[in-house]
Length: 130
Image (tube, rainbow, N blue to C red; front, top):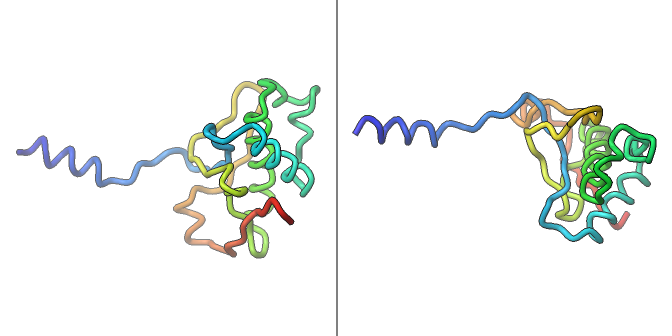
Protein backbone atom coordinates (compact mmCIF):
# COMPACT_ATOMS: atom_id res chain seq x y z
CA UNK A 1 0.00 0.00 0.00
CA UNK A 2 2.87 2.43 0.79
CA UNK A 3 4.23 2.40 -2.80
CA UNK A 4 0.76 3.34 -4.08
CA UNK A 5 0.56 6.31 -1.70
CA UNK A 6 4.03 7.42 -2.77
CA UNK A 7 3.07 7.26 -6.46
CA UNK A 8 -0.13 9.20 -5.80
CA UNK A 9 1.82 11.89 -3.97
CA UNK A 10 4.26 12.20 -6.86
CA UNK A 11 1.43 12.54 -9.37
CA UNK A 12 -0.34 15.13 -7.21
CA UNK A 13 2.77 17.32 -6.89
CA UNK A 14 3.09 20.01 -9.55
CA UNK A 15 5.76 19.29 -12.09
CA UNK A 16 8.49 21.89 -11.93
CA UNK A 17 10.71 22.87 -14.80
CA UNK A 18 13.15 25.73 -14.91
CA UNK A 19 12.44 29.15 -13.46
CA UNK A 20 11.45 30.58 -16.84
CA UNK A 21 8.61 30.66 -19.31
CA UNK A 22 9.04 30.65 -23.07
CA UNK A 23 6.51 31.02 -25.86
CA UNK A 24 7.03 28.45 -28.62
CA UNK A 25 5.13 27.56 -31.76
CA UNK A 26 3.25 24.28 -31.72
CA UNK A 27 4.50 21.31 -33.76
CA UNK A 28 0.97 20.25 -34.77
CA UNK A 29 0.18 23.48 -36.66
CA UNK A 30 0.59 23.96 -40.42
CA UNK A 31 3.59 25.84 -41.80
CA UNK A 32 1.17 28.39 -43.34
CA UNK A 33 -0.30 29.21 -39.91
CA UNK A 34 3.17 29.35 -38.35
CA UNK A 35 4.33 31.69 -41.10
CA UNK A 36 1.40 33.98 -40.31
CA UNK A 37 2.47 34.04 -36.64
CA UNK A 38 6.09 34.67 -37.63
CA UNK A 39 5.07 37.56 -39.89
CA UNK A 40 2.80 39.03 -37.22
CA UNK A 41 5.42 38.86 -34.46
CA UNK A 42 8.19 40.31 -36.63
CA UNK A 43 5.88 43.03 -37.92
CA UNK A 44 4.75 44.04 -34.43
CA UNK A 45 7.99 44.59 -32.56
CA UNK A 46 9.63 41.19 -32.08
CA UNK A 47 13.41 41.24 -32.46
CA UNK A 48 13.72 38.97 -35.49
CA UNK A 49 17.35 39.77 -36.34
CA UNK A 50 18.40 36.47 -34.74
CA UNK A 51 16.50 34.44 -37.39
CA UNK A 52 18.02 36.27 -40.37
CA UNK A 53 20.72 34.39 -42.35
CA UNK A 54 23.54 35.98 -40.32
CA UNK A 55 21.75 35.55 -36.96
CA UNK A 56 22.51 32.99 -34.24
CA UNK A 57 19.04 31.40 -34.56
CA UNK A 58 18.86 31.10 -38.35
CA UNK A 59 19.60 27.37 -38.15
CA UNK A 60 17.56 25.25 -38.20
CA UNK A 61 15.94 26.95 -41.16
CA UNK A 62 12.40 25.79 -40.48
CA UNK A 63 9.28 27.91 -40.24
CA UNK A 64 8.55 26.38 -36.83
CA UNK A 65 11.97 27.25 -35.39
CA UNK A 66 11.85 30.81 -36.70
CA UNK A 67 8.23 31.15 -35.57
CA UNK A 68 9.15 30.07 -32.05
CA UNK A 69 11.95 32.58 -31.77
CA UNK A 70 9.79 35.43 -33.10
CA UNK A 71 6.74 34.52 -31.00
CA UNK A 72 8.91 34.27 -27.90
CA UNK A 73 10.55 37.63 -28.62
CA UNK A 74 7.14 39.27 -29.07
CA UNK A 75 5.78 37.60 -25.94
CA UNK A 76 8.77 38.57 -23.80
CA UNK A 77 8.54 42.20 -24.91
CA UNK A 78 4.78 42.48 -24.44
CA UNK A 79 3.74 40.09 -21.65
CA UNK A 80 4.62 42.53 -18.88
CA UNK A 81 3.29 45.65 -20.63
CA UNK A 82 -0.06 47.24 -19.78
CA UNK A 83 -2.68 44.73 -20.93
CA UNK A 84 0.20 42.28 -21.60
CA UNK A 85 0.15 39.72 -24.39
CA UNK A 86 -0.51 36.05 -23.87
CA UNK A 87 1.26 33.24 -25.73
CA UNK A 88 -1.49 32.03 -28.03
CA UNK A 89 -1.24 33.68 -31.45
CA UNK A 90 -4.53 32.26 -32.65
CA UNK A 91 -3.73 28.80 -31.30
CA UNK A 92 -0.34 28.47 -32.98
CA UNK A 93 1.82 28.83 -29.84
CA UNK A 94 1.89 27.93 -26.17
CA UNK A 95 4.00 28.44 -23.06
CA UNK A 96 6.63 26.00 -21.93
CA UNK A 97 8.96 25.89 -18.95
CA UNK A 98 11.58 24.03 -21.02
CA UNK A 99 14.22 26.38 -22.41
CA UNK A 100 14.21 26.03 -26.23
CA UNK A 101 17.68 27.62 -26.51
CA UNK A 102 20.43 25.61 -28.17
CA UNK A 103 24.02 26.37 -29.07
CA UNK A 104 24.42 30.08 -29.78
CA UNK A 105 20.65 30.61 -30.11
CA UNK A 106 19.48 31.93 -26.75
CA UNK A 107 15.81 32.60 -26.02
CA UNK A 108 15.08 35.24 -23.36
CA UNK A 109 12.65 34.12 -20.63
CA UNK A 110 10.13 35.62 -18.25
CA UNK A 111 9.71 34.42 -14.67
CA UNK A 112 7.85 31.14 -14.40
CA UNK A 113 4.05 31.05 -14.44
CA UNK A 114 3.94 30.52 -10.66
CA UNK A 115 5.95 33.69 -10.10
CA UNK A 116 3.98 35.68 -12.70
CA UNK A 117 0.65 34.80 -11.10
CA UNK A 118 1.77 36.79 -8.07
CA UNK A 119 2.65 39.79 -10.27
CA UNK A 120 -0.04 39.90 -12.95
CA UNK A 121 -0.43 43.11 -14.92
CA UNK A 122 -3.05 42.22 -17.53
CA UNK A 123 -4.63 39.63 -19.76
CA UNK A 124 -4.20 40.80 -23.35
CA UNK A 125 -3.87 38.43 -26.27
CA UNK A 126 -1.66 38.69 -29.33
CA UNK A 127 -4.14 38.82 -32.18
CA UNK A 128 -3.12 38.00 -35.72
CA UNK A 129 -5.84 40.16 -37.27
CA UNK A 130 -4.77 43.51 -35.81
